[in-house]
Image (cartoon, rainbow over all chains, first blue to last red; front, side, top):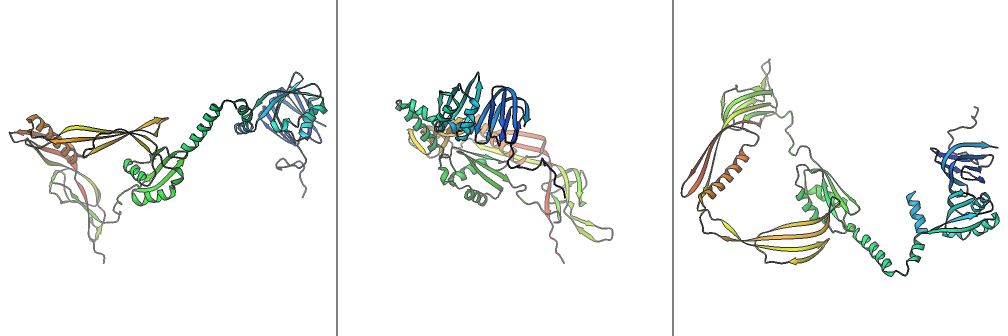
Length: 82
Length: 390
């Protein structure tokens, strides 16, 4: 039996970042390795294999501790880059 | 979120701003050093963030490495508040007294309420609860709801379920009464319906059983109206529970006399005692001599739709003296009328009064009220049949 790749229903993917969104006002990122860029309208985070870029207005880091980060503000877009 | 803020307040935290250098590197270094930063915001090349007091001491190294200058903008928390007000002993003392008083008072029961009481006497239940120790001012640690529930169920057989819920300083006794207090006769128990009084039948509706009387016929008390014995076509008898609705016109005579020479007592003195109560403490305020009978009235402080166990107990007693004067005719008439109305209320409940012929007779000795009434009433009375089983 072939195993399906990228199973959405798997609860935890070890070693990969876990991103959770609450509407477009809050984002929780688990597995963040560091902050690459930080400004009011753009926050770029290192999530291991890729980087994730949150664009919006009045962005702030609600919490930044170990690998857990939360972003507050008006999120307009999320981009993933290698 | 609110609980996190409360925790932060108790532990204390500082808000700071960091300028110059590289904010991203500063954030990463803080993360590596296990410094928990929150509410970080980057505005006009200035990083605003908050950090706990303990972590703020560790922030110097990441700031130096990232080339940022850190400056405290505001300090928050209980520690700073106490430091700021440590010279104001009165304030601190007041706060301590406040918290001690709150914690002391919250260890007592403040109010008791009863829900679900329909036909039962709420006062009786409350009185029993007080006897069992569930009363205003009782220590919460001494109240055992499970034991109390059992005692209630043993004392009051009309309660089918009881729950005593204590939330904070309030107790709520929730009860569910039994549906039918006297178990109705079983459907299969054979019975007749007989006349409960003499009268002339006006309506006769049979739901089950055999009709024994006709409409407009006169019946005496105890006559069978609907029989529970029915005859089958094959000649055998069957016993059933008779059911039906029978109304009849009945006669009722009411006579009530009141003697003019009736000895009565007059109130000669009113004595009043007043106590101020605070939970279980009673402070006497006013004391008069106590007479034979007294009436108690508790006035509670009422806050937020709840009785608070703080208030005044008024105890009033009356001293009576025998009067030798005889009653005036009008006074005797009023007393006779009072007794007459009481009797009417008792005897005509659930009946329609069709006719009333009231006569008032008065002489030197007494006042008499005579009334011949015609009533339309339900005269059904169930009488169980004794059937021998073979």
